[in-house]
Length: 299
Image 1 (spheres, one colour):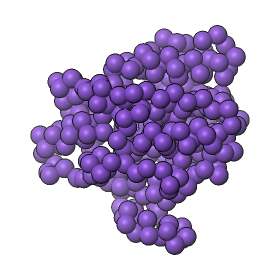
Image 2: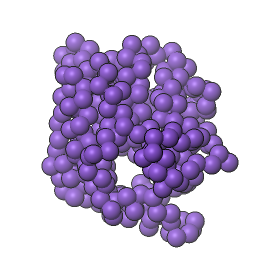
Image 3: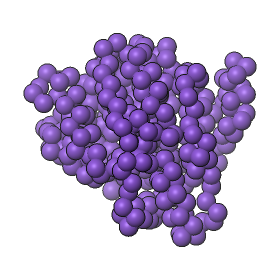
């Protein structure tokens, strides 16, 4: 299984497509493994002429774990931010952005199309802002700016995300994973029961490490309001967001697009906080079309 040192961290990655094609780097979100990028989406992007690299963020999947490093809880993080104090966390989203750039360095990739989903979109904002020279384009998928005035996640979605399973027995873990997927998923495109079960089972068997998610959440909360940084992004940007996202409301995507000069935005009704098979072709077309346009190639 391919892995490399990136920014001093062992990162597990997958490399798809022709080595001669332009690179598209996929950055996944909070507590999520690289496998949450559907194989069908990866294959579709390869079919559009890209070398697609997806990887496990630090502290999740098969990448390096930060076991033993304690993160402050959400309540403490929120209180500290409200009184203007910077909380001490094991690592930051900026650190995770350096992992992405470090992976590019390790694989001898000069520039790439950067695609980030959810927390991965926040990480990608850091990459696009601080390493514009390494970015051919930026696509943000159901993410946000951290603007505290935006609508919050629906209560049931947030509870499903942060709640721990009742036990570590596989049956309980699968039930928990399926409940989370159903709660934050797309109301217009519910996953087929058996396929969802198989996907959740495969994810658990690949890696189950909820402690990493705790540190991911701390990094998100400590990052605060990114609007000042996001306004500095000068990379061709596309924002994709579901109009029925219960975890990161669509206003987060709209706020991002409003901050970035020249950014395009596309919102889809019935789409939640997942990547349903029914939308794979449409999303692949949008991401690839934006990347081709940014590079000056025909879509």
